Length: 134
Image (tube, rainbow, N blue to C red; front, side, top):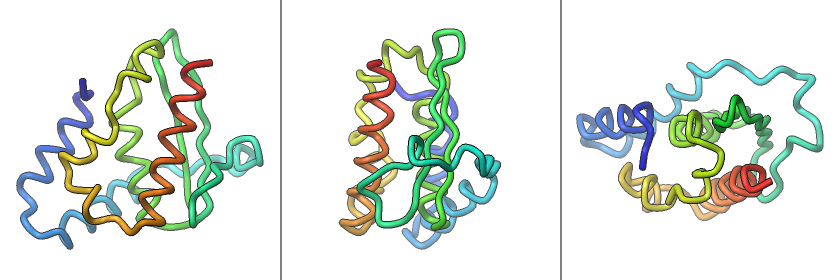
């Protein structure tokens, strides 16, 4: 149930054979993402459970899920960009049905992230699901 944007990332990853190339691509995705407005970097948008600082500004748009985010760590900004590709544009009612662990596994991220980064990704996914559930 992945979005077209996420499928595009999957296709990109198929061409990148080495994990270092994939890691660099994730960082590039983060660099390409617009920074979150400083006014939105408040305790309400901060995600606990991440080793670095992470903010997610989540807002439904005409019944579709949408969020922006930022982090003080480049790899985490990239992971936010990947999660945006996975969730943005999904009907809010279907956000909980997205198997993020399986989808991220298609990119090989589950095996290559440190335990701290994996915990952070889980915390971001939990925030996304909780917010979508209302």
